[in-house]
Image: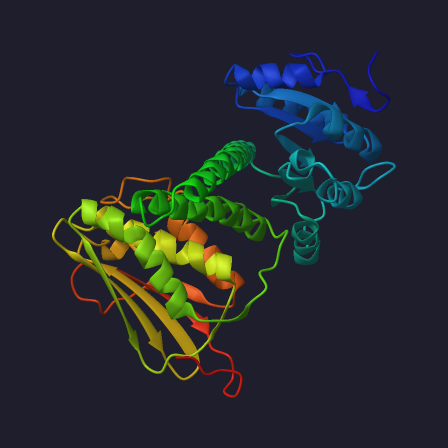
Length: 395
């Protein structure tokens, strides 16, 4: 049985599944006509069906609201002077619907009200177009086609974005799982190397001390990655404290020196300006230094040098890490901090390193960017705040 106030469709069953099936078959779309005058409905239905559209009909505003929610038409042709609810109210309720699929349904108002104020009111309520009667059938067909096409493109784009977001979430969950497992295995490795060190003094086998030191550092690095995730998700605010950044730079540089030597790269670092304490989070700053240094070693050519500079200004501290590699093309520099982005010349890695550095830098009230004045190669600069004078003095 048909709903009160609704007219049966001549060429399709009045069900949502019929609409979806029709769309899958590449028909132009499904249109709901909301009109209470049969002499207007009949020629309009004939024109639309000849153009290939599935057509539904409602004679009053309440029936129209029910059918929009149940049939999900691609377009609503809406009269204003209707029984029960007028077209103004139907349009207003449609745009306030909690389901975005329903709320964004295109609407063309077809009405005898043709003053400029009426048209303005209809557009303010959310109508996509306003055609006063009498209107051109060809104009209506062209406008209907364009609105349906635009609406479908929007839905397709939203679905692609949703799919991409799901993929990103899955990748992030996998990364977190892997780092949890990495942390667990490094805890075991660190424990055994500590036992071996107790049985064999470091002076007898310096390699054991190096393994113990590296496993300890990797263990803390896995913890630091989980810290980055919490900051990124907004679940944690990074507390900052005064610390000696140059000492931390020296510590990390010492850890990476053996790996750099294997590639024929030397690491040198220096300080510019008077050494002072920096407002930072120690684990976060370690992650930043490690990531920048690892990238510089990875992309630097053999027999080259990686420079680390701790520059102290009046109010800010800058850490610069420069390599002699190929660098980043100017047109790519605006994107290198995007999550999962990898430059055309830097194809290794996950595309998360520089993104994580920006997340951590900003969480500490600083920032990171490309140093445009480093000459050849590639140079990154991280800036952090210095505590006010009187709270600092370090050598």
